[in-house]
Length: 218
Image 1 (cartoon, one colour):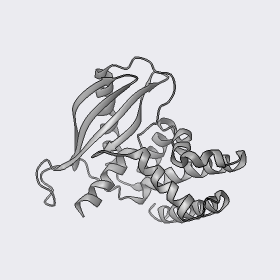
Image 2 (cartoon, one colour):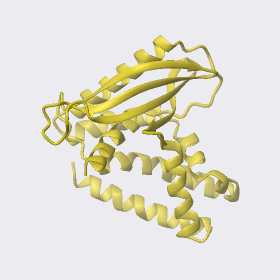
Image 3 (tube, one colour):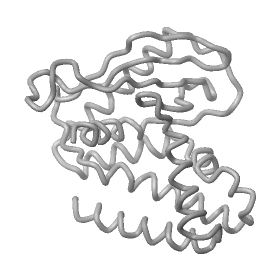
Image 4 (cartoon, helix red, strand yellow):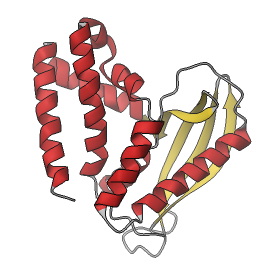
């Protein structure tokens, strides 16, 4: 139960993620640390809003402006991207964007101010990326968790058009990008026998169901 609860908390931070792949500029470790702190605090303030309608509006804005969903969508299907014709690719990317918007709304957003916190532990610059190591945890006054118990996270940052962006997020060594790919490979190969049109039909049905559920939360 603790792992599932923390997974919900992590998902709330994923909507700020951008998978950068454009030309690299010089992002300093200090800038990377400042970005991670300010972005995390921004999301915590949004989550403390009184209604889901307010939260959805703010989080959807972050998703639309700060997340490179085109790249994330292509990475998620990996080798199967080449098996799609242009029409299938366009339909899939459009569905993926709806999927991303519906995904975070499946998790409880009732995170009160001060309930969740995070810390940046160290920042290490490597070739073309900067690794920001941190920890997300519940405050000690929450009876379900011991003091400072939490999950280690790694933000892999690059710079896209002079804007710091996250290339990947790792939670206790588990990569978000890889988890997306694992899920989509299963949907395409195991569930739909590598038939792209069948996959797209199932994918759209899954999204419609999620959107209907989320609508009732408003």
